[in-house]
Amino acid sequence: MNETAFKRLKDLPSQRLLGTGTPLCAGCGGLEALHQIYDILGGRSVFVNAAGCMTLLAVYPFTPFRGAWLYTAMAGAPAGAQGVRDALDLLLAKGRLPPAEDLTVVALTGDGVAYGMGLSATSSAIERGLDFLYIVYDNEGYGNTGQQYSEATPLGAKTATSLRGFAGRKKDLFAIWTAHRPAYAATVIGAEPLDLARKLEKALSLKGPRLLLALAPCPTGWDFDPKDTVEVGRLAVRTGVWPLKEYVDGKVTHTRLPHPRLPVEDYLRTQGRFRHLFEPVRDEALLARIQAQVDDYWAGVT
Amino acid sequence: MYRIRLHGRGGQGIKTAGRMLGSAFFLSGWEVQDATVYGAERRGAPVYAYVRADHGPIHERGVIRDPDLVAVVDESLVGIPSAGVLQGLAGRGLLFILSTTPAALWQQRLNLPDRVLTLAPPAGAPPIGTLCVGAAARLTGVIDEAALVAAIRQELAGMPAAVVERNLDWARRAYAELAPHAGRVVEGGSGTAVGYAAPDWVDLPLEPAETAAPAIHAALTSLRVPTGLWRTLRPVIDYDRCNRCWWVCSEYCPDGAITVAADGTPRIDYEHCKGCLICVAQCPPHAISAIPETEATNP
Ligand SMILES: Cc1ncc(C[n+]2csc(CCOP(=O)(O)OP(=O)(O)O)c2C)c(N)n1
Ligand code: SF4
Ligand code: SF4
Ligand code: SF4
Ligand SMILES: [Mg+2]
Image (cartoon, rainbow over all chains, first blue to last red):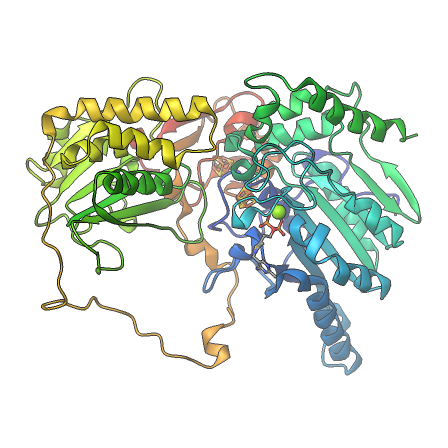
């Protein structure tokens, strides 16, 4: 598809389809991306949601969804999505569901699931060619249980289980997905709604396993003022920490080339989880390592 | 037995405050029980902690319904019935509020003559649980400053030194300011099983799975949840300056609390706006300002 319905910001939907009144934190970057997605996707969908912050979206008797939602164990969302897809396909085959009333099957999970516990189920779902959209809100930790580190936690970030800063490195989930040759994969962020809308539009035009991986600035887990969620997200893109890109037909394209690319410090400084890199003394070595990781990434982008 | 409740919002250190006060009692030789009560909601939502302290083992369980002291970090909660600040204060018990409004006015408003004390947060201090810990410790009259300081150090172990010092400073100031009221909180009797009146429990017998984990057969029921109560600051649009670029404020609002009229005019849904102030930060012509919720006139 070459023509996008989203040429300018004005083309974004002006109606909010996801309900208000959810229990998620004020300023939640994951919720910001989710409402932007739902405004386009709408209620003709089944959300299969693994344990995490977003499970709180629909706590009986309250739901912000117009369509279906169901809850699975942490590792089980892609398997749950398979079950729902199979059930819909059976109903279609038996003629009990008119094709026009088919639903989009969506797996919705945090990074703890997507990068870790649920990876095996995800890998096999992609391998089976499951027709589903997988939305990840990546808040770089186990947010719902108090922000312990996950396999998406970046180098240097303080979490409840890495009080002096995480010593490991953020896993590259986008690369793991694309190595499976899915129908579609993209990184997005709520701070760039037009980019997100175009990618979702493309994903919805395709069939098969599709990924939308959203960086989700998390005021609670990352320790910043809720009003700064958009600014933090924008800096993640402008410093090159969060590359916006997509994978279609075996090819990766970057949809934003940060130019000039700001120093990573500009991003790190906005968040309490990195404060120890600056106070009481600057950790020059670690700051240089984080910058070098980002520089290395972009050196490989042609 | 002392029975104390601490009320605030998620993010104001209420859980930690409960632990600090509990530890301060413990270090002063008391037996202690403390717990925090919060729902599935997050930062901004009303939470409270409760502390019991007695001369011997404490057998009483559950939330405190007849407090000797209620300390409130966030004054905007007092008027919210669901926050339960005033619960159990009808007969006795003291109410302490971090507020710049004089105690006399609160006493009049709440019809609690002589039973409300206030403290204006010291310059530079946010509304934070530690201030209430210092105040509560002094109001009991049985916790000395050394125990208060030791308890705070213990509960903040692992935090940066600057954070610990800041909290100690706040607690000490509140402790000092309330010196004239030392011992104002009076211990209630120690409950016994004899004469115990069971609360109005809701009985939940084991049920079939479809009842215990029911399906919701309705859309958008979350609209019934008034998350607008979480707000301490209210975003207000100045329509004379607004450019009608709804794709900024309405798109960025995580909660979808800014609706867009057919002519592009944005409207903030105060029933649900949680007060994150992203819209204030992002509005290009700075047409949205934040005003304290306590000063807002209802829409
Ligand atoms: C098998 C299993 N282990 C642990 C938990 C407890 N748990 C619930 S949510 C959660 C964190 C999930 O992290 P993530 O997927 O990143 O979502 P987030 O909480 O950040 O939204 C954990 C560990 C669980 N529900 N199931
Ligand atoms: S902890 Fe973070 S991801 Fe979870 S609801 Fe709060 S802001 Fe959102
Ligand atoms: S962002 Fe500001 S100027 Fe634009 S529509 Fe919203 S309130 Fe009006
Ligand atoms: S403060 Fe603004 S952005 Fe935040 S919830 Fe309210 S209307 Fe939405
Ligand atoms: Mg997470």
